[in-house]
Length: 263
Length: 301
Image 1 (spheres, rainbow over the protein chains, first blue to last red):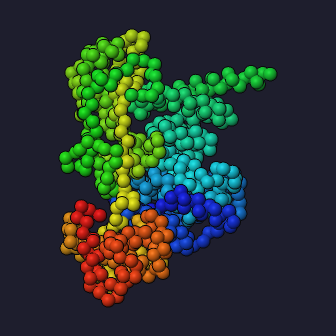
Image 2 (image 1 turned 90 degrees about the vertical axis):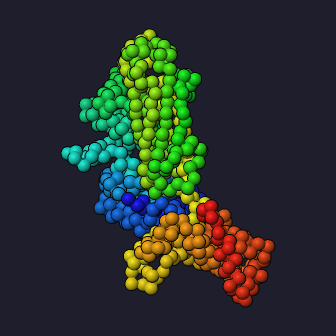
Image 3 (image 1 turned 120 degrees about the horizontal axis):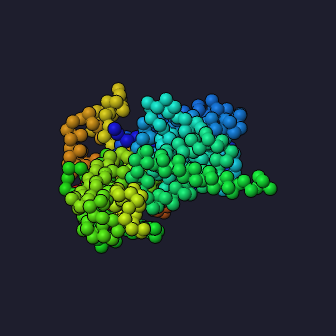
């Protein structure tokens, strides 16, 4: 397979464009125009595949269609944003062109986000706090890169009857706990085991205490991973260890919270 | 070894005889890994080979476990993606060592298309068996980390130092257009000298012309020289239209304008803009020959 060499945008390019966006609202310009306008900031790998600017353009176009189906640009509520996240994760996670080292590059996502689809980002993340740059720049908080990682890792496989259940059921907080911790998010077997553990535990105790339980469980598992190579365990061993950890975290959480209820 | 103090007995570095990281293209002699793997791109798979052996009886003694019961696993894994922690880690190979087999050689081929930015190799020795045995301080759990060693290798995907070049079928890319019969074509725009060189200049080599394709793939020096000289000539001729020297000096490193000026200085050392312009206008043969001569990089471009 030849690698699709996607356009890249370095950090100074992101900063330049975001500065410009302060004074103008991003509009869904024709992507060819966008490419032309920012050609001076665009880079790409010089060799090792086929230059594929058009792939990036098509990805942005499909993300815009997904956003439109969720309500973009007129409807913007939590349900619309969650729908976009789910559908976009499924789309990005299955794209063949993104099953290469290119998709691990922050500057590739920075280009798609900042040059080709800034209007979707502004719709998806309305807050203008310090996290705003992170939604455009590449990294675990990039608007689309975070969804690609979810779609890639949390895929139970084509033959599974409920292939995408983890993506559909896990809350945003649970996703953040998994994918913004490099020691977990970068370890596919561990990441999917924790996601399964979250789903199983939420089924037993309900979703409301899961935020506290998940935080506690991921802390314990990160420490355990320092001592035991969790990647060495069989899937069954890992599943059991993760479920036991969630159980411990649940008991700890309930013990901590119960006195307040009783007061 | 780990930066954290593990709550059980482990293996000291002195006990583990690790031969080092051997890497290279599959099927070719491997060499010790350095901090940077140059001349790599997605089309280059990487073969990794490691060998480890230890005094097993001494290891069992240090861990407080009977040597006859002890099984250790040697695990080779690879992480990739930029950052202090890799974006993705995969296990490449595992081997068990015990009283009968006190050494292990692990080997794997990592597909180049899956790599990105850096390659972080990890070799670990972990407890495989027995579980919950030995002294109070012995490791008790399967997977307990007993010894580990890492190596970070920056893998260069061309970056700024490799020439942007690509094989392409011109009969597909330029169907029904006269350029489909050209041996190569430089794709760039003279109006964007501020633009990044590697992202905005690309030399396409026509894969439909077999002899050109073969010469290119085999790295025929004269063919590459002619191709690169063509790129240099096009850029230099455009740069000569600059108003003055100052305009040429304002282009940032990595830009097309910067590269054009660098090639101009290499091809016409010590000559000012006006002199080079005169040579182009009045001695075009010499002008092009000087660029052609400069394009003889031999060691690779």
